[in-house]
Image (cartoon, rainbow, N blue to C red; front, top):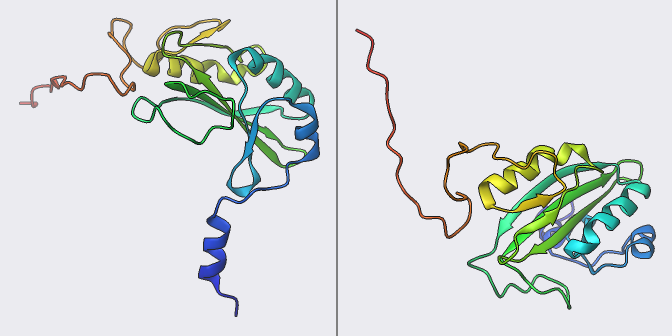
Length: 180
């Protein structure tokens, strides 16, 4: 009987994978590989839209997710490829190619001094709500978004509550009176 524990720990290690040839040939941006063979590309903000258009042509038809990350407490992280400067914020986009069973993650560095990113709405309309969420909770604006307004917090809310430097406060909870 094979040693299940040993094979599980070997699978969990980050090991280099052979990059699918189409991706390596098509996209001229820095690339790393992660566990389970998911390709991770590191485009700049200027490269994001052309890359996503190119990837859509190559079969990456669906955007599964778009999220924002605040690296305020990790400014010297070393998980980026050579030549990519770490910034405070990062937009992470997950694309999938169903016909080939491939996933790609795009990690775009967003500087604190200019927290903006091109909107993917024209290519992937399903990013409308996640982009608004990143704007509302992290303060990253998406250029070209059709309705860049708050989605979760009230319009009068001051600040962006998922930023790591957002002051933690208390909001009194108003309970209804118990029915008589």
